[in-house]
Amino acid sequence: MQFSSSLLENAVNEFAKLPGIGKKTALRLVLHLLKQDTKEVGHFSEVIARMRNEIKFCQRCFNVADGDICSICANSIRKQETICVVESIRDVIAIESTQQYNGIYHILGGIISPLDGIGPDQLNIESLISRVQKEKTEEIIFALNPNIQGDTTIYYIQKKLSAVTVNPIRITTIARGIAFGGELEYADEMTLARSLQNRLPVESYVSGR
Amino acid sequence: MQFSSSLLENAVNEFAKLPGIGKKTALRLVLHLLKQDTKEVGHFSEVIARMRNEIKFCQRCFNVADGDICSICANSIRKQETICVVESIRDVIAIESTQQYNGIYHILGGIISPLDGIGPDQLNIESLISRVQKEKTEEIIFALNPNIQGDTTIYYIQKKLSAVTVNPIRITTIARGIAFGGELEYADEMTLARSLQNRLPVESYVSGR
Image 1 (cartoon, rainbow over the protein chains, first blue to last red):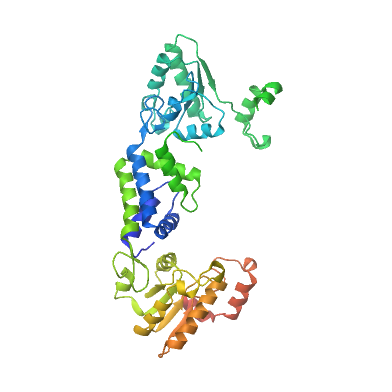
Image 2: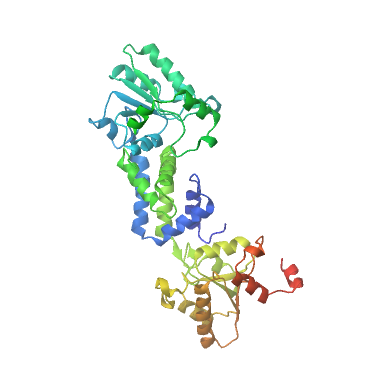
């Protein structure tokens, strides 16, 4: 792609660095910005820079925060005794969108994946262990993606936890099964087999809705 | 979508204003930027703001430019006697990518479309007429999208031109027909009819490749 302006070219190249944005899409976005007010584009650029410069990570759960503690941890209405362990901030936002969870979180920042060179030391696992030792945690819910790496991570953390905790903590994981609206014939064997093993009494299923 | 940080929320909302970017994509982009160096994100934001603040439009052809005249108009190797009339900057980039055109451009900034409230006065038509009167233009090539608005615009400009020009100017339009790789059975009747009417001698077709 040839541009008659280096300013335009640089802007397109910057946008094209973003994931899932090719050169053509980048050009469309830049030409859109070019049509906007200088002030509006200035605001866009400022908000992005401020976000990166000023955003903090919660010292307790590693969620994004405006201060030292995120708004979820600081919310006294939320059940501070239930910790939901997730891989990333995106998972927190997904769970929050359901409006069904009233506990707090712990963000690992990834999952154990030896093939990608990610071991337990690179994740926020130690801080979870010490958190559980300090706080009056009653339940830990693992909400990790259902795959080998997720299961490995759950297994590793559970071992660690059982070695240090004195009081019994309930350790659970989100249910795996056929997704709502999914079709049995297209489900993989693993999922179908597990959802048969972990079948629920119809009573609890109906009341759980 | 609920966010635990207003900085993050603002950034996502800004990205979601861009065309074709929904909330989920905006979040993915913002989380990507969050993983980058502060310096890199600062550069991203600066390049966007600079682009909007400092970019100029060529005083001759209305293309984007770093100075008063764009690099295409300033290029003395290009044939200054041939003007390709296009709707937008995007079309210039598309034609430049073919590396087949060696003339200069004139960007209308839109096409005549009464339904959208766009009349000839809102477009760079007057400047094209006065340009043709001043410069030694030999040919004008219309490269507008083939639809009713495009044809109306061509008709309007051609009328205007014939009223003011003394020396004969060759006025052409890009060929319409079946696209390379296209299939006859899926072509609309209008396109197929036109491509039959404007059939080419096979000789010129082969040499034209």
